[in-house]
Length: 71
Image (cartoon, rainbow, N blue to C red; front, side, top):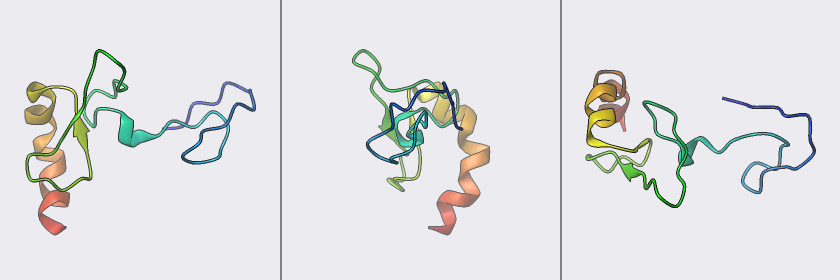
């Protein structure tokens, strides 16, 4: 997901303007990690995705399961 706001503010992780680091967003709902929202890694410790809640992890499991098992 790329959000382009037309500004040349850049992202330290990617170096591209307006780009969001997806590792800092919930894999299911897309909410960004901020001070009051902490994301947790997949229970299998695959380090591919992070979630904001147990509900998001359960709901996303069917989509992530095949990728997680391939690692």
